[in-house]
Length: 235
Image (cartoon, rainbow, N blue to C red; front, side, top):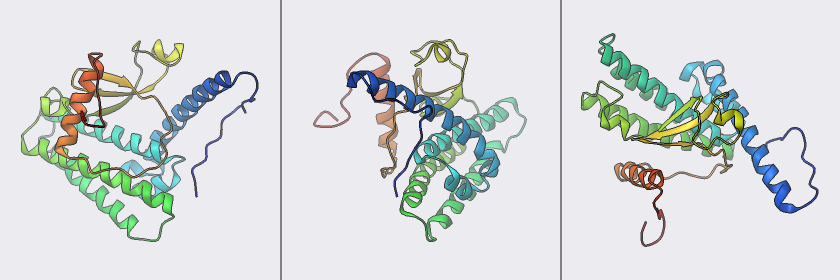
């Protein structure tokens, strides 16, 4: 089974190939952005805020957007907990979220132990890979006593947000003018708009502390408009 996505209205493949391929790319990005907004909302409906992730994952129209949503929820929930700690409202907020992460991860592991279609199994395994890394970061935040979103241990993480952002190369005038929500990635003092390029449902490598350092190095190089070679002898 392969993933399929519809584009409305249908595109007419006519004229110069570079013109309708550019139009196809623009349509793909618009469709994926709209689908991401739906998947984000469905996380609280079908997924019950993370309590039933297997049902939510099976209901998602695209595995790639499930991964983006997973990262978004981890960013949001972690920052809510850190803000509570900073204000002194709930000294156990981060520990409670860490415990909830373990519970969610256990549910996903039980899911892949059952009989699943190949595509859904791979999607679930990718979510588990990301969640295992997020769990480790949450443990480190708790262990290091981090109590603010301004702590470098948190600033150095690759964070995903769904927000209105003015400028920074929006793909449409509405996005550039902060009239619509967009997916934005933050790490240290760098930020990038998510490009909504379809990547399929390939397997993912385990994320290690070295990977985290690579994220910082590569994003800082891009932020400073410098070169970055993630593969080959220099990578």
